[in-house]
View 1 (cartoon, rainbow, N blue to C red):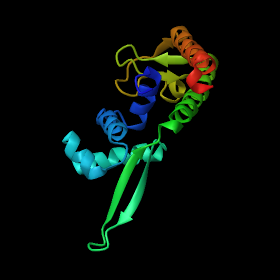
View 2: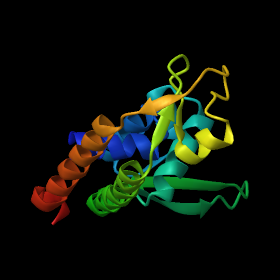
View 3: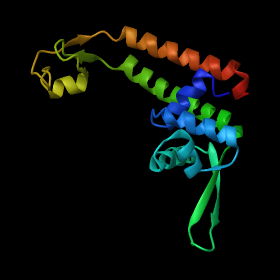
Length: 173
């Protein structure tokens, strides 16, 4: 399941592009239940890094933990485990949100006139261009009308791909 490119992309998003998170997930799948300290030693990562990644995964409901108190030291220890049964739902939810965002972006692109600075390649909506007197806010260059047909096609293509994936991938049924 972790080899699926869509799942990998969503996991990277959850992990903040920290690829060490995949190693943490692998350690959790290999060892079933493991402490953050054991993961840290096994992967040769700072304990703080492992904990941050585990918290991100926990926030996404992809890992769970048990907390136990040591009666002698009064310290808590956490035993972590992967909960991959929730992964398809998490990925599906994120893809559905991405689809909503893309459709909103498409609507803006289709209903807005844009301008750009040829030097800075900065893009402005018509309202922003008016506010700046059709001058670039960065270099003061004259703005030119921007043809966003390629942007619209790209967004439509992304929407189509996601809709097909949601409809056809058995992982999301």
